[in-house]
Image 1 (cartoon, rainbow, N blue to C red):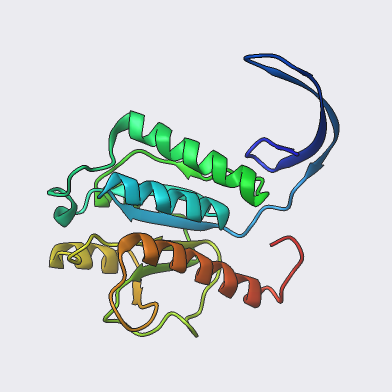
Image 2: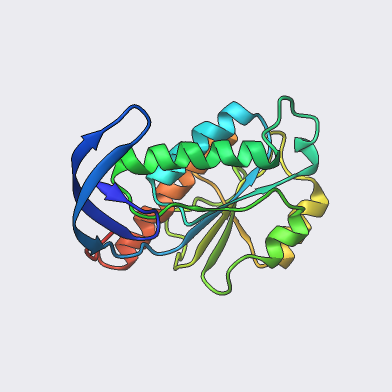
Length: 206
């Protein structure tokens, strides 16, 4: 099976293998229905945990991945940042896409200040910041596009909370307890996908 990351899937047969390349004969190419958009704003902390999160959200069909340098992320080491790290994130997402049978590779953006990330949030839909001290996300009115914001370990600064609120984000929790950012990110995307699926009546295609 071959996918191109932009919604096409095809069956193919290997006709020749060489040391550094493989030749395949491509059969019928099909279009895969696009999923409702779920965008993820992530902190830029520990690189190994970021790579783990990248794999999981790619499996779940996240639409975009946008790292933000929160004030409490600046002291984390070793941090995941820069073009070389973005390439690693893309590689992990490609591998996850192949294994999960997905057809859409998430759009990966470079690290940006919070203000720039908020200006790029898609219009309409639901804007949710995950916060363990807030009401539960279940029962929360969710419609696409969904944008989820994950904070750094240690929480948001007050000025960051104000920026998110002014940008139309509503705080919601995933349940009792404080989760690590990678756990919250994977769980948040999965829950958003489930809520959208339920809202659409379990429509075929996602």
